[in-house]
Image 1 (cartoon, rainbow, N blue to C red):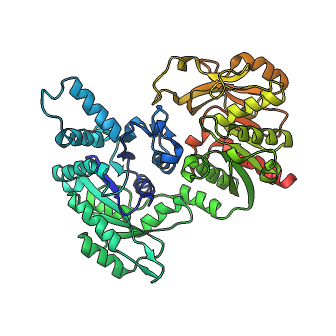
Image 2 (image 1 turned 120 degrees about the horizontal axis):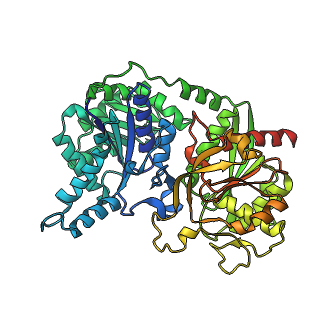
Image 3 (image 1 turned 90 degrees about the vertical axis):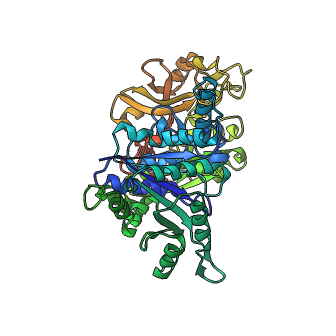
Length: 537
C-alpha cells in the first residue's frame, strides 16, 4: 500500500486545535491497526523554537534525538505513544537555510533561486520525506498558522502542487475553522468559515473535509449550508465541539465519522472499528476521581498556559493514575516573597518548581524550595527547579550565603551550579544545549530507584548548566543525595533529601515522556505523596 498523506490547515483564528484534530485522527487510524505518524510545518523563520521565549510560542518540546520542536509534537507523542524525531518538525527557517546553503554550494547551476520552484520543491521534499522510509501507511501533516497569513503561502502552494501531482486517493485536505456563536442573537455564524475556505481555494487547495470548531452543536441545515458554499461533499462538514478533556476528542471525531471518511477516500485496508479501550479506561478515571489535591506550579511564565503544557498534561495523567483530581495553582515566582510565602504555599499538598532560563524570578523559586524542605511538603524540581533546590540547600544548610548558579552570577564564590565543560566554548545559541535522551543510573537505595523500579533509565534534557561536582561530597555529608548520575560522564541527574517525606529534583525533563496510557513515574509518585500529605494535614 502506498503511503497516504493528510494535510490539516486552519482558518479564521489560531489556537483552534489543529494539533489536537491531527493527533485525534492519527490515534483513530492507529487504533485501527494502521502505521501513522504526524509532522508539523511551522511558517516562522526561526530554524526551531529553541531560542524563542515561551511567551512567544509556548513550550519548546524536545524529542529523544535532541530536536527542539513545536509543542504540538508533545500532543502527537501523548496521543500516539510513539516518539517523534527531527524530521517531524519543519520550519520556514529550515527550508530557507537548506535552499540558501545549496545555492551557495552551486547546486542550482546558475539559475535564479525563487520561491517557486525552489522553496516549494524543498517543502514538498520534506513533506514526503517520512513516507519514503516505508514505515508508515498514513502521514498527517499539520500546517501552522492560518490561511491568509503571508508566511503560510509557500506551504499552501506546495500542497496545491501535490494535489495536482498525486493520485486522488493518496492525498486528503482537512480544514479546521471556526463557527462562532454570536451571543447577542444566540446564533451560530458560518460566514467566517466560508471566507476562510474561499481563501484556501484561492490558493488552489480544495478541502475534502471541513471541521468546524464550535461551542454549540451544528444543525443539519448549517452543515448543508457550509458544504454547499464551500464546495465539499454533503456529510463532509463535521463539528469539533468543546470537550472536557482533549483526550475525549478522538471519541468525538469517531462519532462524527472523521476516520471513516479518510479510510473511504484513501481506500485504506484496516480494522472496521478502532480499539480505544486503554484511552477510555484513562478517561473513566479522569472523569471520576475519588480524591483531590492542590499542587503549586511555581514558575515565571505562568501567564501563558502553553509555556508549561507538558507539565500540566503530566499532572492530568498522574492524577488519573491515582484516581485523583489535581488542582494546579500557578504561582508567579517573580512575585513570591517572605511576606506572601505562607499565604501562597501554606495550603498546598505539593510544590513543583518549574524549568526556565535567566535570572528573573529565581529568588521566588528558591523561597518555594525552602518552604517545601522546611515544612515537609512533597517537592519536585525540574531542570532549573532542580538547580534552585541545590542553590537553596547550599545557602541555608551548607551556609554559603552567596551560593548561586553561574548562569546568573559569574562572580559568586560558590558556583554550585556551573556551565557544563563542553558548553564553555559555545557561542552559537540555537540548538547547542545538551539536548535529547541520555541514560541515568540510579542508586538502588534511593527514592528515584523506588519510583522507577529499575537501575538505568533514559530521560530527555535541555540545559547548559549542571551540578558542580566539586561540591558533591559536602552536599552528601549534609543530607542531599545525588541519587542519579549519567553513567558516562558522572553528571548529577537527580538529587533528593532522604530525610524528607518526598523531595526530588531532576536535571532532565520527565514531563516530556508522560502519556495518558503510560504516565511518568515521578509525577505519579509525586501526586501519591501529595494525597498522603493532604490526608495527614
